[in-house]
Length: 349
Image (cartoon, rainbow, N blue to C red):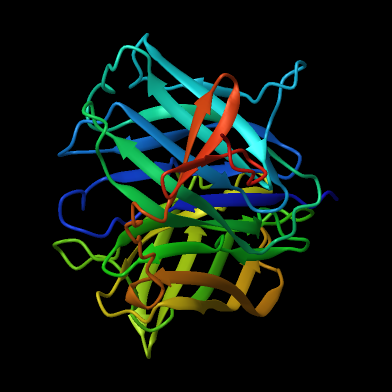
């Protein structure tokens, strides 16, 4: 059986300072499997200031690259917020990508949120399941008067996680939540060889994470795509954990052998401890149509809480010491301390 992995990429872009505190440059959330090529968008939110140009260095984690066409041109396209007068320059040097988006007629980007670029990413076949980090560095945003903020670095996480287990199990894909966030996640069952009708389990969540409830104090738990119209779910809380029973009143088996059986809505406390913590499915019983089946002691999953302890701090660059890159006559020029250098650091006359 082939083992698939899913790369879940979540961008976090927090800007310090008051004038541009709400600006945000980020990737849309997406999933990509090893060996897969996928087009994803880079988005800019700028609710207060209007921008014409921007430039940044993009450092992708090892195993993730920007794809190229048959002419070795990077697959980067203008987004919906660009005008007909916008152009993009994109190159690779010294282990990172250099991007400059600019308007030849000084036209500002349209709107104040949405995609500014789309890029085609390629994941290597052997990307390992772990949390990786990438960076936007030397990010400069320019208004129509050529002024605007410059930021040293904004990081983003690349989570490589297993999409399909090796063996039969109930599981949740590892995921992340912000303190105070409410998020709906799927509970999945992988049963490659045996057909099941019912199951039950105890769910232990980390401290600070609970299942949300509606105005009638009912837990927000819904049947998944593998359930039939005859399936029902019972869900309760006792002795520090949740108890779930999924069953069919007509003895109908679950459809398929992989996928979501339930969705649950989780709530992270405002003071939930930042970091990666474990949750557990315990006392898992799977029942076939003849009411027999295996029982498993425990399956674990990870929840990463993002908060003050690991927040991404964006620091405004000092104009006298920061590097700025421009494209001129097809070459990348680095401006530092008022002087111009080529990409190898040699001063230009």
